[in-house]
Image (cartoon, one colour):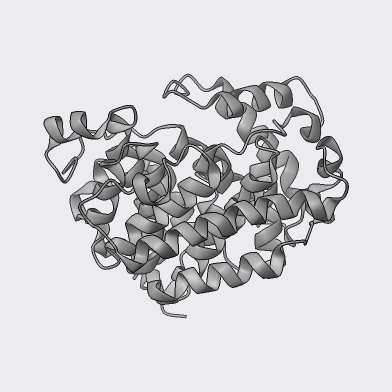
Length: 341
């Protein structure tokens, strides 16, 4: 099924489809595209945003790191730091990048310790729009995947909700990749959030929590998990009365912040679990951060359904297709690539 490829390309497809609608209201979207939103890319190559660019930075850092396992914070932090600074100076970093990412990467570029460069008060969706590669990387234990998901967020977004939402985004994608039924995701995510509520990953996050106002590391991380549990309540309520035609942001939030981007992207996928194009179109036709919502919906859908579920012609139309393919080739199981052991 080529689920790794499906998820990576799905992220980029959703990002590109949602980019033109990111700052439009629903009336503007309906007038320009009709009630179901954009049907196809507006140009070739289909341009993505900083969402895909930073996901590529995370992925390519991981590809390098996994050549010398085991994965831990000491190994991956300098690799991600370098990739993030490279992104900061890339001439193609001109797609309305988030201010939090820019400020934090500028601090990294100046040589600040990442715990000082990060924006401790920001839980913007930039924390988890780029976490999908952590879900797709092969051979990681759950504790490694959770730690890496939180660390890649923490390098720029130090708020605990950004960390928790990134972990849930990564685990939802991984569970779909491993065959979990979409219907089982909300309960599994709630269980994960409750189990991890006071787990602070010192070996990955170091003394990050001391830069906050919290009395302890456990109190710091619990704030993030509590925000995620609250948005899971909203997701559960929306799924009791799903409305495929309504603005998804009305149900689970506009997606500018991490927990809402996670929940609204997941909601779009769960509205159309067997139709990935409809899922990202629903994300693109939303009143909030449409490119981030659609990119997460695409990552979930691709992990569930695989590459062949997407329109075949899109693979040659999307920007950075060569880099996406290289990552997928590194991580796709041999059987999925048609390789006989």
